Image (cartoon, rainbow, N blue to C red; front, side):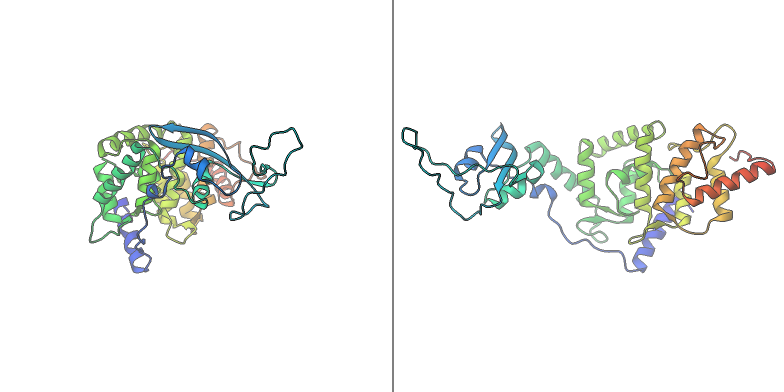
Length: 348
């Protein structure tokens, strides 16, 4: 089945099963980020627990705080600070301070917890840079431009809009090239892209929010598929997530076979040595011996097994005591028996 047909079939199946859901409107992630605050306001206005701030840096009037706040477990936000007893005669008592919080009794609030710290103490958290927020807005606008108002929800685009977007990027829908995009935008299923995944995914790449820049980036990533095994593994695993049905833990065998054809062929990693077409042998074995779906472990370990076969066509790396899934063990036994009967012939 051509991939376009598979995509449409899966989408139709979701509709019939009542699983095509319209995501409720959610506020932009960028709008929830840190709001501007000055270091002087933080220190002067705070009258709650003892707080120390470190590494406060100003950048064109916007304060970016790397905050470590230590709050003693015994202190409460609404309680007044304890007054130290007067010192012995002859010592200065001009300054009364609350007791210093200790690390072993307190709670450390790191950078990632800064938003909660500011909000808990009545302050507006610092904002991201103007440039970062500008890119967020452009990506949000770009996503909105992909939506079909009659078919898509506010925060999610469906099959036709996804296909139109991939086509605009000059992506071949019959090759694994599309999985590059689906991995970037964190697609939860084939034919579904959510606004948050689109914005956050593309923002993480650092690519300018334009179709032209995204096209160029996709071409670069496409060239890396066959030479960067770590990157290929990342895209390969994203394909599993996109291909399985909602609320299911496994891929349908039919879908897995189509995906393997796409991923183990150019521009992906070709699963074929000088004398054995391993992909063809794997598919022949499954056609004869396997009728069940493909779970995540089987999917992931098939790739690891494929990588091994390309460097060791004799399968000497395999052993009965290894940690391979049972289906891999069965394949090795099947292939060796076939070798004894006349050898595995290369299949184009």
